[in-house]
Length: 290
Figure 1 (spheres, one colour):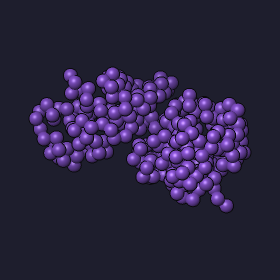
Figure 2 (cartoon, helix red, strand yellow):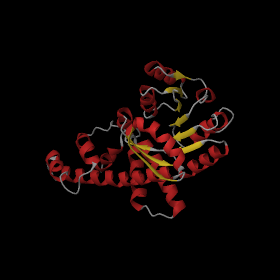
Figure 3 (tube, one colour):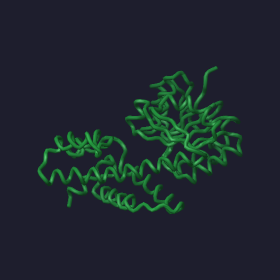
Figure 4 (cartoon, one colour):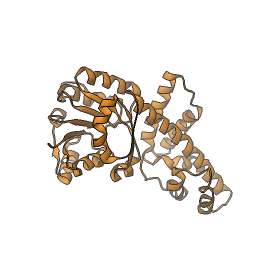
């Protein structure tokens, strides 16, 4: 019997993720706010483009969402045409949006009341990871829901982990973004210092990347940062959204995040420079403007 999946939201992440499911032989029904994008996807992957969410989730065993933020989740999950009202009993809902832990807990409660499973499953790896099926997925769910959904998510995952109950996936993604924010600022300052010291950036990176300073960002972004090229993935606007979620959760749980708060302001400076859609490594540009 063929597994049926609905995929709601075909942005830079959702589009290829849904494609991996279709390529794996799963029957995929998609919905996107812009109908043209859904039709383009269906033509490329031989899936079904649906005009409404209620149509997309019909007969679906799994329903994935990958939208913008909390308000977008409320829009697709709740209301007469929403997922909670129209998903078949026993379906498992998997949300890949980076959102607040509070919305994950809210949707889990609504899904449980409707007889549905729910997993908050934000991803890391960016557009390249989505296209290559190499995403890291951190999940908040009941063990039984996770066990049922893991083989499906595995079609676009490199690493897949259950972190705890509903909301735990989102909180783990916050940890990820907090770590990245400080790391990129540190790398930006290091490269800027090297430039001001008239050092050969490539030689510097070749040396220090063999020691304790090594990171994914250094290996993959140092050269493009040195060249002032910032069109390699996750945008500043999206990072500011994520850091806002981190800071809001920190207020709720009592965590102290001074560096994260500062880097969030620095990304605000990048936005003022017109870098809203530059990738996150563009932090170095504000140093060059001093």
